[in-house]
Image 1 (spheres, rainbow, N blue to C red):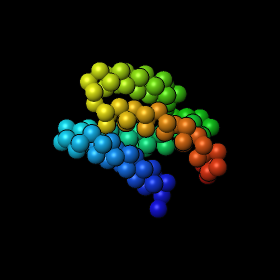
Image 2: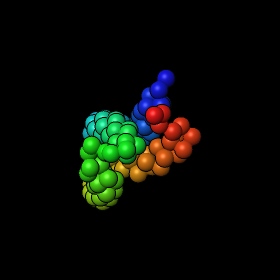
Image 3: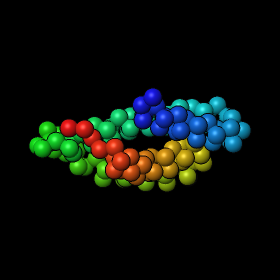
Image 4: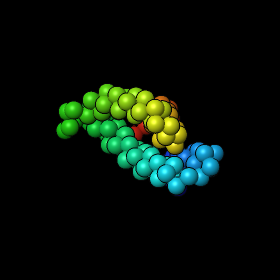
Length: 114
C-alpha cells in the first residue's frame, strides 16, 4: 500500500469515530464526507507542492503562498465550525493542521527521489 492509502484510512477512521460519537446524524456524516474529500485534495496538493519546491527552478512561482493560504483558511474554518457546532468539520480542521507536520516528518525519513 502507498502512504496516502494509510493516511486516508487514518483520517476516515477519525471522522467515522466523531460521527458515531455525535450520535450518527446524517448531517455530520455529510460533513465527514466533505472533510475527507477535502483532505484527499489537500494531500495531493501537498505532494505537488513538495515536488515544486524540490525543483531547481519552480515553474509555479506562487507555490510558496500555498502555506499562507492554507493556515488562513483553516483558522477561518475553525472559528466558523466552532460557532456552528459542526464537530466533524472542526475535527477536520485539526486533521488539516497536523498533516503538514506529519508530511515533514515523513519526508525527513523518506526524501523525494530525484
